[in-house]
Length: 128
Image (cartoon, rainbow, N blue to C red; front, side):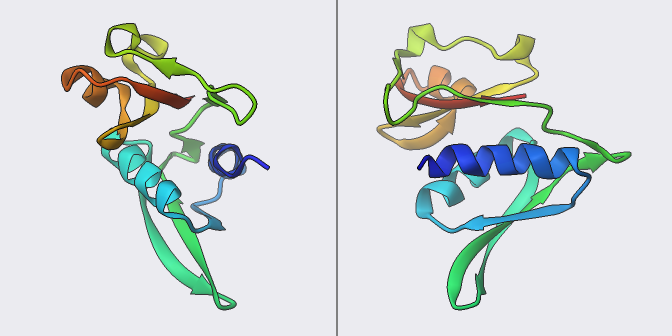
């Protein structure tokens, strides 16, 4: 079961349905990814809450005139096939309108930040 894939698809589907928030099960990696997505401007933020005794992550989406900010997502590295990129291989997503999310030795960061710091890593997904 791909928990990261489920999270990014839930974000996209909730935006397409016109919802303001989406809840996903909590993990530290998901929290770090939502921090990067907030910094890149794709979501407003995320908060950890206890629901029925289990930690969940409540993600607040950005809707502009009922149109979601997140138009699409694509999972790159999967459990069956890992994809790694060097800093020189990191390219713009959708001519700069999207973002590549990487897992680097310094933590989860966007492709722009990884290129600036000359870091490579596992390419998790793209979002636009």
